[in-house]
Length: 160
Image (cartoon, rainbow, N blue to C red; front, side, top):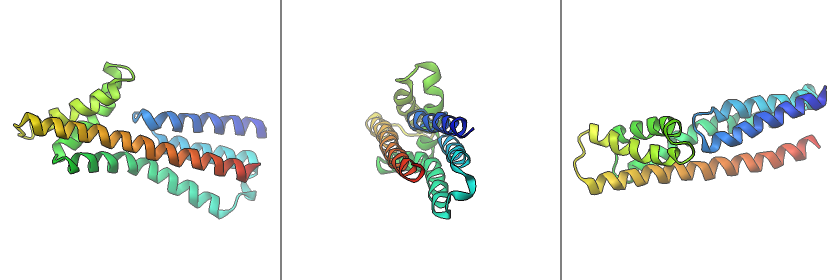
C-alpha cells in the first residue's frame, strides 16, 4: 500500500510541476495532495510538524506567486487593474486557443486588451504593459519551479 501512496504522490507532484507553466491547473492543490499522499505512504504519524508547515506554506505560495508576479510585472510597466485582469484571463484562455504558445500570447494579448478596455491609447505603453505581463509570468514560472524542485529534494531527504 505504501507504494501506491508514493506513486499517487508522485503523480500529484508531477501535476503541480505542470501547473507551474499551465496556470489553468491548480498547482497548490496538487502540491497539497502530493504532500498528503507522501505522508500516508511514509506513515502519517511519523511526519513532524515542520513538514506540514513547510508544505502548507509552499501550497499557499504557489497560489500567491502567480498573482503577485503578474501584478508586479504589469504595475512596474505602468499598467492598471484592467491589464492585470486581462492578463490573468489571457493566461487561462490562451492555451485553449493556441496550445503551449497561447500561454505567453494570452498573457500579452490579455494585458493589452484589458488596458484598451480601461482607456489606454498609447500603443507604446500598451506594448510595454504586455511585455511586463509576460515578464511577470516568466518570473512566476522560475520562482514556482525553483520552490517545487527544492521541495522535492527536501521530501526525498525526509522520506528516504
